[in-house]
Structure formats: structure tokens, C-alpha cells
Image: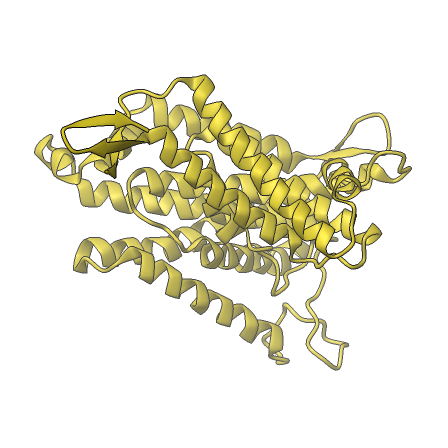
Length: 370
């Protein structure tokens, strides 16, 4: 008797929902065991986490605004990464591209902001961030199509190059370094919010909706249309299925790869511009790991643009909610959110396996379904 893995011809939607829901519940149960082991009531902790401490809190609107500020760069980065992933170009360089975009946006804010109207500065910040990040991603794509380098390793290494560039800027006090405060004796990043800050839309109360949230939703809708209803989107899908088939059909695969990766990285740069234009300052932690988390979100959503927004919202609740809950439960590590994210990712991947494949039990002379 043995086990054999066979591919499913079809998995009903209700069964997929059950598998994925079970994966999330099991991940939460694993988290509950960890919380119990350190003397924390998991029901109380999860209540604080999922409500992000907003219930009964007079300044809960500030927490929700912070939540949206985390959601925007994560969702946009995950959407951008999905473009390259659909083409089976494994862009693991979201962190580096985000950093380069942030540096480009901050440079414009300091050099152009004092001399131009704010709305022009913001537009130029977005364009500079998209161009710099796009070119940074294009470098890896060009090496791929020209020398057949491994894009996973190349984009991964470029992350660290960008990080070291940012660290050099952060640690270097010099006359040329306009990113740092001149009056400070130690290197400290300078605030540029007086020159460039994305406007917020009043809602009639204390809560204000940052315009970047609306822009991100619009961009997500446009990317969905681009992938589903345009020639370029169709080409991306064909290359993802088979590059040889695309070549046989007359598609210029190398050109499409370069174009798509540039577009992917440019959108990550735009996410960076939204982030620095909201916080008003550059920092060595400006990415908040969205380049890595965006990969998780894209795969959790199976590269579906609408589901990416749902997954981004949930993952952002996880991060922001854990931060708020940890304020009430001091014995819980700040890394608990990462543990939950890892558990959810692993178990969702397991659930995805069972939606695609079935395990059957075999024996000599026949087969018995398991």
C-alpha cells in the first residue's frame, strides 16, 4: 500500500473556501497556543488585534489612519509584484526598488519643493520615484534577457545594494548631504513635509482620508483592466504560460519582459513616493518590509488583483493590530505578527496544494481513494 498524488480536474469554490478558512483558523490556533504559553489570554489579544484598539478609544481614528498608511504601500507593492510574477519573472527586488523610489521622491522634495507649488512637487516626486525604481528593476530584467542571469538572485542582491546606499546616506554628515539636518551633531534625516505632503480629504469629523488611498484603489482597478482586457496584459499571460509559445506566436518576448518589469518596479517606486509623501521624511526603515510582505500577499491572493487588496487589508490589520495589542500585553514580542504571517502563509500554501492535488491510497491490484 502506498500514497499517490494526482492532479484534481476541478475543485469546487466552496471547497476552496473551506480549505483556506481552515488554514487561517489553524494559524490563529497556533498563535493562541503561543499566547497561552506566555500567560496571555488569546481571546483578549485577538480582540485587541482585530479591532486595532479602536473600540472605545476616543483617538481610534488616528489608529485607523495609521492603518491606511500601512495598507497603501503594501497593496500597491503587491499589485506591482504580481505583474512580474504573472510573467514568471521572479522579482524579489521590491525592497530595493522601494528604497530607490523613496530616495528619488525625497530628492525632488528637497531640491524642488522650496521653489514650486506643492501639487507640482508631488507630481514630480511620483515621476522621479517611478523612473528611478523602474530603471533599477530594468537593470535586472536587461541582465536576464541579455545574459540569461537568474532574476531571483539578481533582484535579491540589488535589494542590499539599495539598502547600503540608503545606509550610506543616513550615516554620512557632509555638505552635499541635503537629506540630513544641518544643525544636528549626529546624522538625522530632515523633515520635508512643509514642501511636500499628500493632501487628506475631510470626512466631516476628525478622521481625514489620505488621497493616496483613493489613488491606490484607482491604480489597482487600472492594473486589473490592463491585465484582463488589453493586448499587453494578454501577452504577459501568454509568456507566463510558455515563453516558447509566445515566441512562436510572433511576440517579442524580450521587449515584453523589459517593459513589464519596468512597469512593475515603477509602480513600487510610486508606492514609495506615496509613503515618503505621507510621512514627510526619509528613513532607513522607510520600506516597513513591504517588499518582502508584498511577495507573501501576492502569493496569498494567487496574483489576483482584487484579492490582493483584500489580503493586503488583512495583513495590514495583522501588523497594525499586533502593535496596538502589544501596548496592552507587554509580554508579547513585537515579532508575533511575523510569526502569524509565516504560519498563515505556510498553511495557505498547504491549502492551495490540496485544492490542486488529491492524495490517493493505492494497493496491489487496485486503488482506493484516500
